[in-house]
Length: 154
Image 1 (tube, rainbow, N blue to C red):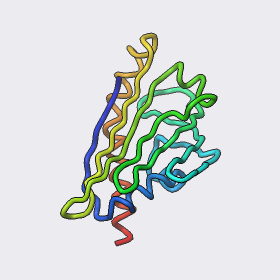
Image 2: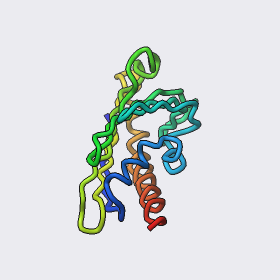
Image 3: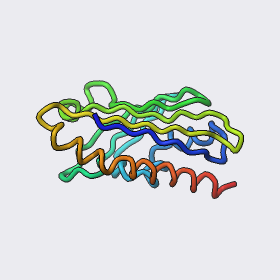
Image 4: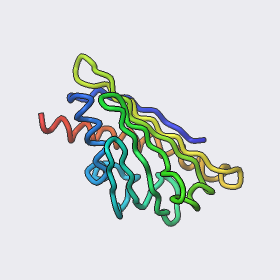
């Protein structure tokens, strides 16, 4: 499994940060892992969206994925592959879990971003080392982009 956790303090409220995350089309402008978005469906605290995924450091065509984000208001967003019938092929090739956890801090909000991606043994030996080399830098760039976007409005 390749995983990374990045923390930043952002001058905004937890609600403002989590609202940005739940807006998949807006968030895709700062997250290189989110390619073209085909559709977005939001129902209360759950958003599903179909997009072309891009994994940093891995070559090859990017598969289309349907992700599901679940908001715990004011606290966190958890992200995973949407349940069947979506992602039949992707589920055979990988596992995925991610989150944004927000806690009030003296200077705004402490944001903890976590991403974990795993592969079956036949792919693990090749994919995970490549992903490990690039994932931290990519997630840091993503969170720094969100920070810049939200703090620019202040």
